[in-house]
Image (cartoon, rainbow, N blue to C red; front, side):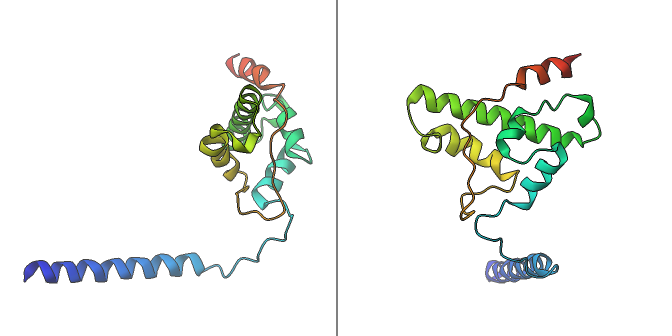
Length: 146
């Protein structure tokens, strides 16, 4: 009998937590649906911070340069992680003679790195698939060591 009442109380507490969480997410109002083919907001912010207009240009940016010293460390690390993941994905695709999106690395790693930029599999009309290797990744590593 005590177990039934404890279970009922736990279910009631769970429902209350769910309702609180739902209310907290809806507090800001409904977000407008993104336009088809539009870049995600997180991505445009990163591009703007580094003064570039595309993800391919972002791969070419040397984040260790002094002109990016004002940016938050998290933003710089996010771009470095993107560069590393894109490099590995492109190399895996070349080695295994597959499309980048068909590699296991893309599905297991790069897809999650892209989420940091707001790019998800559900973005209709906008997809970015890396096709080049970042040329400044080694320079960034060496500059960060000095």
